[in-house]
Amino acid sequence: MEYVSFEGLRLDGRRANEIRRPRHAFAIDAQCDGSARFELGNTVIECRVDGPSERKFGGAEEGASEACALTCSHGRSAFASDGVQAGRKGDGRSKQFESVLAKALTSAVCVDLMPRCEVQVRTTVLCDDGGARAASACAAVLALADAGIPLKGIIGSCTVGHLDGEALIDVNRDEERGRGPELWTCALSAGDVPDDDENEDDGEDHLMGATGNHITVIVEELERGKTTMETFKSMHDLALAGCETSARYLRISLRARTRALAATRALEKF
Amino acid sequence: MSRVVAPGDVLRDRGVALEGARVDALGRVRATTCGRAVERDDGVGVERARGPLVVPRVGDDVHGRVLRVLERAAHVDIAAINGRAPVGGGFAGTIRRQDVRAHAVDSVELDRCFRAGDVVRAKVLSLGDARSFYLTTASDELGVVRATHRESGETMLPVSWTEVQCPITGEVEDRKVARVDE
Image (cartoon, rainbow over all chains, first blue to last red; front, side, top):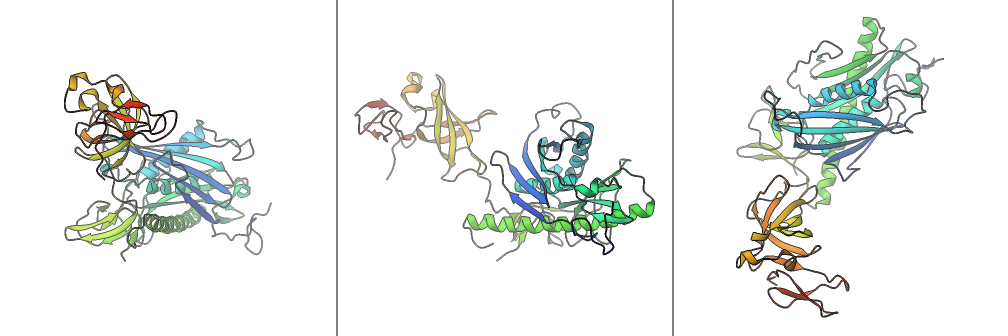
């Protein structure tokens, strides 16, 4: 099957470095402290955030961490994809996703400001057309900001695949089925100026990277990884660019939301 | 017109961080929440678009709806604090039997003071236990400010400090009536 045509167009007409159209909505659920829906093309993710609230477990013992604990839980609606796909709640794959996402989000949250607290992040895949993990991370960032939880910066996230000898950003469902290597990256974007470099090194798939003067805590995961270093390098560069693009989208949408909120409260002009 | 910021935006290259901002490892002041950048003499911070957090404090004037009346306490859903709605839903309040009125404290019968559905005005007595704030109505201007009759649905009118009357059925019920200033 041909994934990239001679003209350089992919199955859905995008070029290699074009992401699908992102969309978002805030405050979709009044029951929780913060919530957001994030869409990448046909992939739809909802995220709900509760907290910061007093930690119920694990706060009392001697030596327990004083900082805020962030927990993630990930679920899929039954109609998210056509059945056979793995990744139902509680299986190994989604457990691993939860822990990696929690690690990525914890690096962006000012955990030191909320001692002995916990923040619960729940993501739900409503529709999976590829890139559900990246979209979940973006939805979680929007929901965290909606809940008013202090953040060091905005985390951008994207997936990159490698098919037909070319790195493809934001792979969709059909391209995921191509079984090429796939890289999921979350990077803390600090905006237009560099931030403090933070080292995150626990051996496995988490790298620390610095590109240009954008800084970053990067959490990434390589699936089906039998790649050469050159392939990885091209995917990695594209992924960082994609993270920056999605972080920019998130930042713009958060500012627009802030202006809209101020307007509905009929405050002085923001 | 001041600047709208998202988390991570740099507010100033050097300075003191107030609420909604933090200083990063390089000494820059960055926003941590969405809102408007506010520069003050003592530093720079971010004012949230949703307004400041409205939380009950001791001595605050609160309005709430009575949820249920027990033998020793009445439970109240606090809907307004000093006339402002709390962000993100109400708080739970409790009026204990000894806090209903200032005189004859021992002979208070709670079901003759409040009923479920009444709107009461109260003061925050203390931060209470883990579940709710303790409220008091021991003052003339505190107590039931609005009660509706169960059958007719009509707002009942106060006829004394301890009684309200339904204007349609004429039925008289007992309440701890608040003096409402016009």
